[in-house]
Image 1 (cartoon, one colour):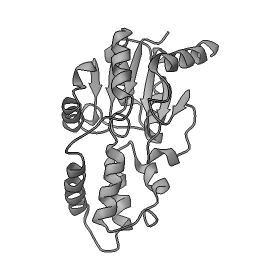
Image 2: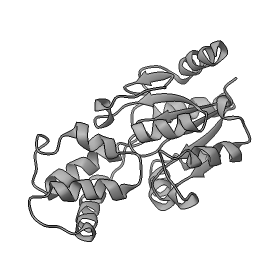
Image 3: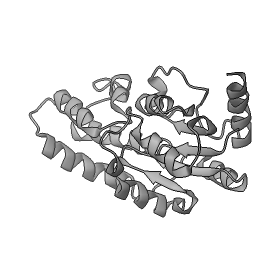
Image 4: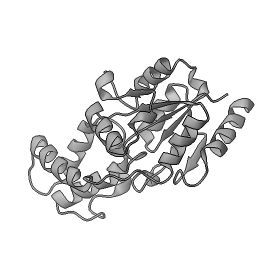
Length: 222
């Protein structure tokens, strides 16, 4: 029986990921052909250190990690001044609350980043437990974030559905023993996922009750 839903943040609740990709392209004056999304997407959903190193190697001109972080952050922040949640997010959260499900969040980003946006979107109050990079030694694909959320929600991993958009995120959720629903975005639709229970292109594709039913039937067969 499903008792909880656990959400990723970046790229799932709000499409911060495409905005960041655009920021890098603008900063380095590169076209999508010069910075293929399919290659870029493999660095999404985990520690940002590897991503910045990847971007630095793409630059035609020498640039330090520090300069890259500072300039890309300014561009990224500017693109997200008026954040909008992805389609269906509010409906899923409201549906989970009405159904009496516990609601968690597991993000590889830091707490200030996550909670600032959730507050702006008026979504912060939905969550019973939020775990971020500030709470663990290793972020996704390590399962620690999900293990922490599940522990704090007081349920078994098999009683929860994780909603993820990235490969690293799905690996973390599955490794922690959660059922996993992939909701791709403009960046991660290019990735090849494995071991998931259901894949959507948007939460508008199916309502939450249908998703729970499909995943619940899969769990029952298992």
